[in-house]
Image 1: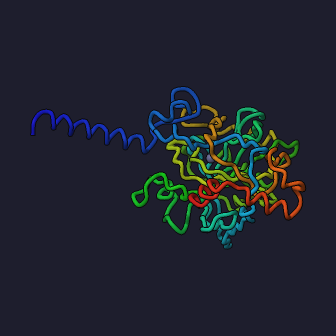
Image 2: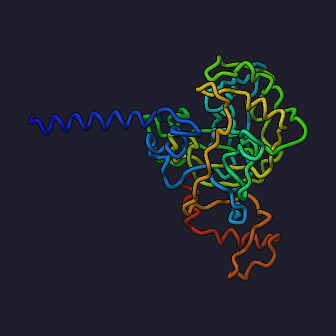
Image 3: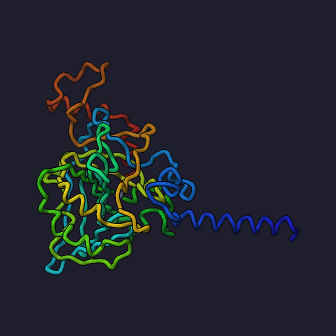
Length: 331
Ligand SMILES: [Zn+2]
């Protein structure tokens, strides 16, 4: 072996090390040198073309009759409990119950892995997704993975050894917006009562028996938006079928302040832990319902009554075949 080839071996070694450090995403946050603008430096997929979150432009959402009702079924026992941790980026909730998610346009069953929140330093920001350019003070994500294809959420993210990144059917995340209310939301109380115990990042987990993440689903999950996107944190894997429920839950300012009292890895207030919206880049947004601003193409004269059953059929037929192929790819 000449000098040149040993240099090549060294270069490859450096490349492998770089790739490994990229896959664990290094140190990241929401501002400064570790902020979203710099994520792609260590996690190249963060610069991909199908990133999340997005601004939901309700007028652009295409009605899709295949987006049927969700079945979200927790197998609860007397011992079912929730464990909460502060991981320095958010508060993560896990449940001891097996929770299966089916329907919602998915031909396969997903299993809940964890849930977490994104919130702001003030009431005007906090959610990752926005709706017609409006942010909400909090957004909850229930992260589920394809139970039929993968044995764990890490594998479904494409970080595991079995299937590579880029398989879009790995994860389904359910997003719930919380709008500001003058009144405390009693559903949140059993959870927020424990913020002092997880004040510092990396505090010991706390297990609570009187709170379940599915209690925070909106009262109706019938109306939702769907698009194909990514994890909103490094490594930004583009493997997520996103669901955003139209109906919101609520939170009061006093309750938000208890979340805002948590501290991050730098012992600074854990706030504004949301990624800015990313471009759609030609992706299609669909909806399980006809949005209030739903409009028929100007050049189409066959749909006169949007509320009629006949019109519904016509709209479905109008769905471009490209959209259908994208939908089936990540289902
Ligand atoms: Zn999230």
